[in-house]
Length: 456
Image (tube, rainbow, N blue to C red; front, top):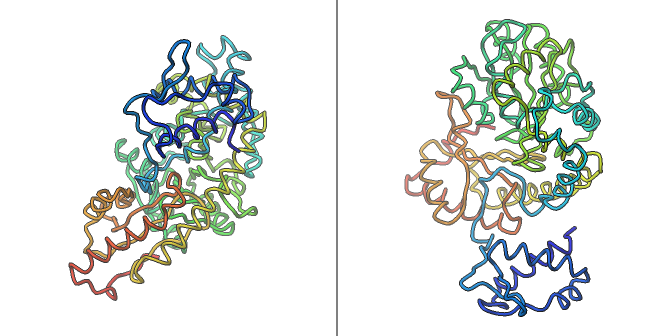
């Protein structure tokens, strides 16, 4: 639902974009705008002040507001953005969260601007425990640590010692690039296990667990980045059982749990014996990335060590962000926000899947996620992925090179598409252009599609 305030901003920009209002034009009076939008004069003034801050309008004393000369509203339709992975800017709840920040300042006052509890504000952890129950994660506030985003949590887990005394890390291939980058920067001894839309080879997983000194297995159980893969509950139970058998910890990155369309799907944490699963939950993808808030559910034996490593990095996560999130959760605003978010992304993913099925040549394989942000397209071996990305860039179409989501020596020719910030009405055109570029590059090489191996 668009607020009156946001409606005024969007109307004004649209009027300029359509040249209904031009540089130097005087705007209707505050009274007329209030009548037009059926809102208070204060709401109109607030919108005009925001437009003035953006240098779209300016005020003449005792005269009114005018359009700034040479102002041009950037058109979102100029770009087709399959690259960005943050939440859709059109549904970020700026105003609602601003109220929460103001309330947090009033409620917590000095607490927010001094050093706070290293593990995170206890009242926030209590609220997060309630929220996690909706995701089938049942725990206690004492086991939670609030971190400055999930990336910080993954960095700490990659560097700190684990109770099993082991050193190596196992990851899916492909996987989240931020994790690969962290492991490489920390010079961690890392192994990979191939993941396709059919899952992983469990005999291979058991062999890796049995024959290697594996500290933990990093896994994205649903809405996988970059494939969009989802494990079944039975597969999750098998993974947990093997981890228990061979004394391997599991780091479960459940960053997009809210977008899972399967109401019966459980996290691995639901099957954990003896505190073997470390559950990481980010709020960046469905909420506000700049908030830098995530939470980690840890075994009791690891909390002190984890907090010590975190303290050496940043003392504590922003108390202001924590306090505002607590109020946002308590108020029910987050639940309402998620309902809108989920439906938007479901619709976008359906549109993307239909477009790929309709326009990509038959010799091109692509994953078929049931929900989430990401879809991966696998390319013929002769295709220069960087050149393809460059050709698309020239057409204002942006995609990601998925080869960076594999360990060195195991890279595939692939691109990742994200639906999070692309406009739904531009998806078809983007895939048509992508298909045309691929076919053109294949034609130049006189490519034989029958020789292309599917990685699905």
